[in-house]
Image (cartoon, rainbow, N blue to C red; front, side):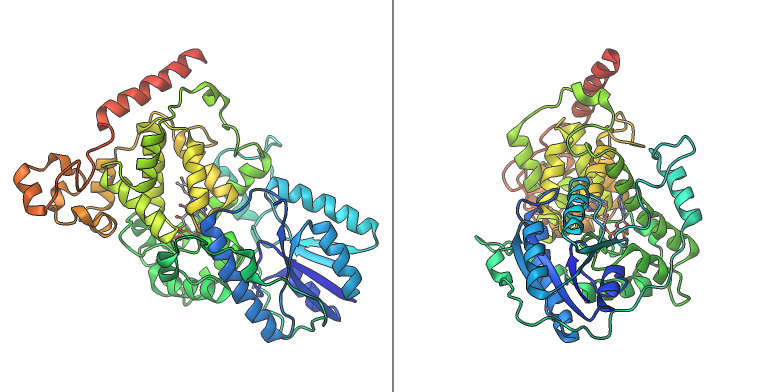
Length: 474
Ligand code: FAD
């Protein structure tokens, strides 16, 4: 028999259960569909850049094995039906998607194709757990991370990852579209220079990143993961987002004796992978999360809509160095350190009182690791509207956060070079420095670097007052 393997968020050859099943057939058609309309949320610009390079890498690997990747645009049912007819395929395999709209579309598609006589199998591989199956003692889904993770961890069995197929037999005569025609790369100005410098999309890039991390970067991760100037986190998130590596592969590698780092470092990394699972657990069980607050009390929250403030935040011109450094890292590298994501998200939702969706959408378009579950769940978590969230009244002080996690200002100096000459004690509060210091450092506040958009204490009082309003109404 002949199988179509439909690649989606599983752009890898190893530890790919569906691909392994397809490889056992007489021949295989590896396929990627640019779905129109998109099933689920259409991916943003930064992730499109990544997808282009990831598909290029995947195609090269598949060609080496004997079956090039076929690209097609359109409605999956029509494409798959035609492809089955042209190739003689009798089976469709793929790995499960969990974004609610995509999962629903897959189910409906499978029914239609089965009715046409095709065998259809979707396997697991994107997550460690099936989000609808795991239930708390009360029979409902989990809303709190710790018991969720305790349960999941206790039943986790991570098998050694299945190797990539040794060789594949393709089907000749199947036409493919050209990737260049999909225009996934920047069409106007080339904003991807920083991305190219920073990342190597594709399975090999993911593997290299993982081994570099486990061979050194993981040392002191438990503490160092909060210091944005250090390369002390794995940076595997964009690889995970498109399935170039599976979470099971990471957990398996983590257990190998050659892995560096303390027991605590390794446990902390496992737990972070657990947070990814938890975010998906929340989204699958509350599919409305991208559009609505988990905590309905916030539905009447008096958010502000200030376009100028949003633009200043997006461009890294708020006048708070740690916030600006984060937003510029995001723009340049399509990535931001987790600690700083929390600081900039808190600043947007509390200091500027902007709706978390404004930030969530900006992240969605600019992050190479944009993930439908992690992005929404973390935004709601920081905003205080989410499950197991930080309480709204806990408002990050961007000055103290900067001083604590970037004490020597190395992160700020790197991304906000116009204030780099300030001494450490003023690097997170340039407005406090005497005029003489500004002169020596070549800074004119309000000209070469912005004055703070809003004064911290005033912003804090305003946010607390807004919060009191909805608490009183509840
Ligand atoms: P590491 O510290 O090396 O962690 C390893 C892996 O664990 C990560 O790759 C990621 O898969 C997972 N992980 C770590 N922290 C979290 C977390 N808080 N929530 C969920 N999974 C986590 N992560 C995304 O992958 N996509 C997003 O779109 C995204 N949006 C975010 C938005 C906000 C406002 C915040 C506060 C966090 C967001 N995160 C998102 C979570 C986190 O910031 C990133 O996963 C992390 O910074 C990725 O870097 P890393 O791979 O070096 O992390």
